[in-house]
Image (tube, rainbow, N blue to C red; front, side):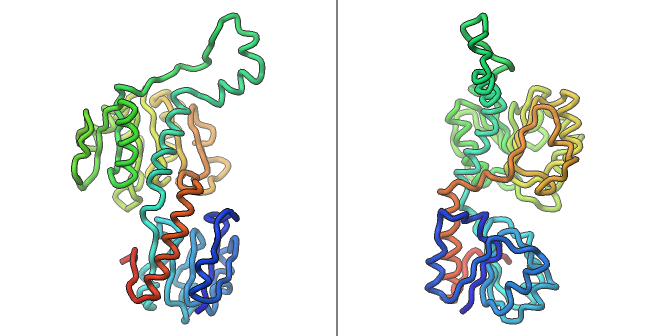
Length: 318
């Protein structure tokens, strides 16, 4: 049994171990694999594990020995699922490893927008506090979150964890989802239509999967529903947002700020308008990457392989 990991570095830059996979057979780990050599590096492998290295139909047909693809992530759009199924290849993902980390990162972005901690820390280091005629100072307006409304668009595992943190901070939670699970029972919680959530919220957190019907859900017309004082947070998928429309709203003062861990194209082109937009934080798709979350991811990847080899595959992409 040969196992090939095409792009292991992002998930495991050296602080985790691949050794548990060795009980299943020979393992070869590449830190990174350019798309044009993915077929060559996967040749002869029974199992291929990939994070973001694409495996399209033209590559898969060059891999007749391949039996299983394990995606080292939740999103699996890098795999041609139809072509894999046609070859009898099982594809799995890891759906739940980073809920706590991503929800925490929602608030890392939000609290930076509320307080501009880094700006004020830099100001102190540069001597502004020492030179200030006042005992205290602040360079931007500061926002308290208690009694504000957190709108959560997509109320799955991450959305619910985000709501739990919002509730702990004394926020009202207004949630939108096409499927209503059980009410969480927080004071002030209620469901709303998408338009209600956008119109009434002081903060909107996007926690939707990317599907044809959710692509571009945040655009010029939906942004126009939001309060000019509101913040938008996206830790889900970049193409949920039309970049140009969001940049335009920020620059025109029709939205107070945005915190984005994802963009429509990653890494972004130098001319992406959000990189220079007013009061817009952009981080490099890192919300998932705490060591704790990556350790859970590794454990679940190994368990997925174990279950497949036992003839009882789990987390299979239909």
